[in-house]
Image 1 (cartoon, one colour):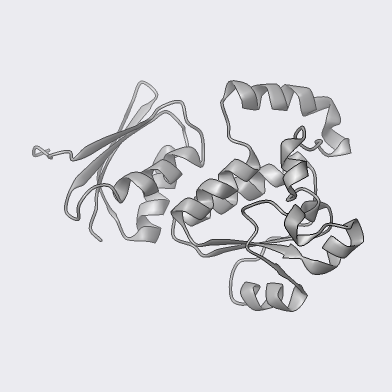
Image 2: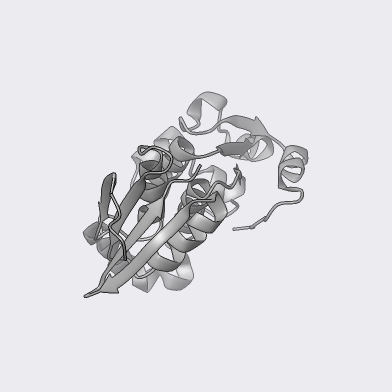
Length: 130
Length: 79
């Protein structure tokens, strides 16, 4: 997970939870702008922005999501972890870039890893760069 | 169709993908092997998604009926 906008975070939550329910092993590696969203503070704040290209749709989408009582991406990740084999990893280099410490990370983060771990986990599976 | 004994009914009407699949995955663990779960859903993706979920997880779909926007799926827990 590279991106930090909600229109990218939501599909990650949806796919991770759907995959977990269907018995897939799921490994989520958060790096760059994605990483900045998996801190305790980020989760307490207002949801992330929609991608600039689609910002005119933003308020309509957020309103509709509320009407649908649709869970936020991090709630979907929490649910995914309850029902399946889901691990969430934070990128160590990105943590340094953004001055994020281990204790700043959200409760659902399992470990801090680097690209070699990501590639090792990804090998032979379906990899999505989002 | 012969009479099927339903062990549990899961009502996910009003929920959207991936809600019905996630709740189905949770509910199937709450019944015994050989028992039948009834799922009621309004999400148009419920039928193809729960079919895909069953193929993937090795559970058996006994029956699917769709009428008036409601999908009713009977799933037998086989493992």
